[in-house]
Image (tube, rainbow, N blue to C red; front, side, top):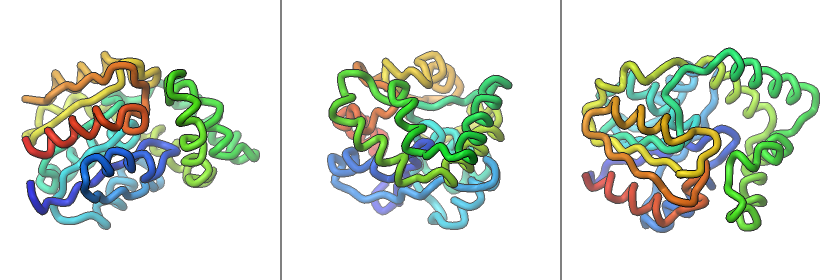
Length: 228
């Protein structure tokens, strides 16, 4: 694994700061590119054009969805994969409609930071709210409404990745906060069951943004995965 670049994909309306506490604990650097594009496929190809020939890949939430799509498209470039607080199913019609409503509100003046504030209870647990509310909202502010609107469009165009996950033949880890209100445990059990040899890591007392809420646990799990 030594010398292999590490790529960490943040979730929707999040930035590289999502991974900072984990990287500090790992004592290493990583590439943390922005997820952007007209749709899921476009976002994948934009990322691949900027990334090394081969790399270890981890993604959280939307980052995990994009990571699964990247493996589906170019499995030979990915040396190992970690999927955090994510979902391998296609979106429902209700989800697509909800995301469209948010996109319409962004066009009408809603800011990405204001939207992050609206959904804060889905992102972090009450016990971490005082410590993390400011940094999480700040990630939305740095993302901005235009990029958030495109990331919502990527969400709208995602597909079911679960049926193809049996083809993953590299070391795989699936990690989730046990109190994740957006991507519940059952979604991660499905992913783990689909990937041969995948390791499931539930993180107690953590919600959706595990790298911020439980950086010690996430760093330990990623370190073990990188050495597998």
